[in-house]
Length: 559
Image 1 (cartoon, one colour):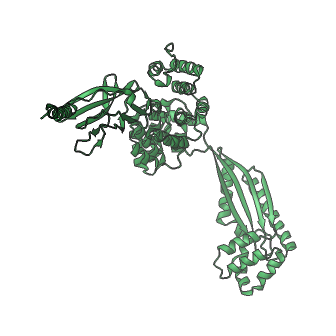
Image 2 (tube, helix red, strand yellow):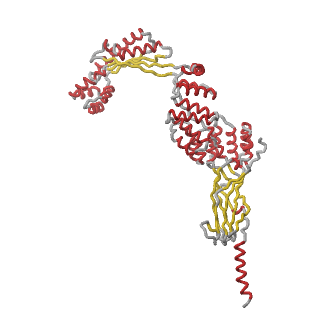
Image 3 (cartoon, one colour):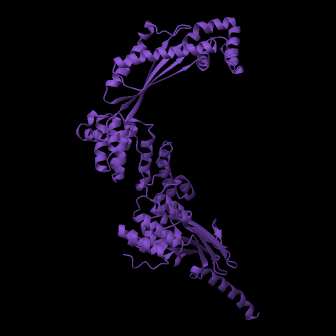
């Protein structure tokens, strides 16, 4: 037999063994694409989708390859989700890659963000198993840098909800009394003038005139006739009742040293009062009577139609009409509270002399946070059953950065009044500062109606990575956080407008304006705003130096 026929099968076997044992070669970065690139922090995570094109005649038929993404940064690295792929002759459940055709792989991974990742590179590591042998290929860098703009979101700058005081410097008081008349009469009867409600009215008016903190703003007399007589008769009757009551009140006010303006008017036929009394009564035919009142606009015809209901009219004459023959005397009185100066002085010297609302109001009269805290502390001691003192003390402590003490007071407020929306919202703010988003969202769900809630929800959605919801929650708020949401949704004109309207711009305000400048390729805005930011906070220089938002710009001179 020809030796060539023996050598061919032998050569084929050797080639198969060689291919089966041959190590897979190094992969190139150009085989891989990453989305997004650069990477970006979203909701506290750095997500990435890595797509790879495995070349033809590369993937060993007997190999299993585990690909692990690594985010590598100064001082450490973080591994992402590993993916396994197998050759055509491997028995398993992983994606199979053809040796002849190659293939496409897609890997989704995410890294928990830490600040060191701002300056980092994304690598892929390859661990290959062929039979009993395992080896690694050199890592391949597929992306560099992490865009961390979303992390500028700062829940610590939120404004906690204040539980407002109900202090009113001027409290409106109104007193009134009714003097009844007999049918077709206008004389004032002694028993009516001596009855308790009239005497109490006169005493209240007299005391108000003598009180230094009260002012009578007006006395009014309204006189009426019932609608069961002719219009001409009732007009004269109501007018006479007015005159008699005015004369009586002038005498009383003179005797009691009451100096106040007095007005008077009369109503000849009180159909409105008649309808109200009928509607409130237990009269059997009251619905019929009310329909008659609505059907006939002419007063005389109304009166006649009602009189035609003979049995019903008798009930009206006994129960309703007598109540419509009267003069009503009323007085409007302003009770004038303590001045701001008096309240501030008492808050310092004798807070026990103030009501809880006056004491809470006193805290709003100073801009000194320490003084505010002292006043709210007094409120918690003097009025421990009012949740507002605890809530507002916690609010000040939050603004001062003492989150632990703030939380303690918010919890005390919620303990006194578990349904108080302000303390629930403020406990949600504490959760936000800890990135405990689930419990924060639950707390905000119990905070409906609180003015400060929208900004808090905006920050919640920013931290969750839902930027469109954040923009809607912030609405027209003019804050750094609101502008950040607009930047992340690429509404740069709106963001710039918002930042320019921030009432007290700080280093972060100008830093965000610099980012807007970078994203709109405006070098002047980048340099000028970064300069202002660093002037307010020297730490911003180091942050900008590693921020890939400014990678295209020369900011080395800003220190």
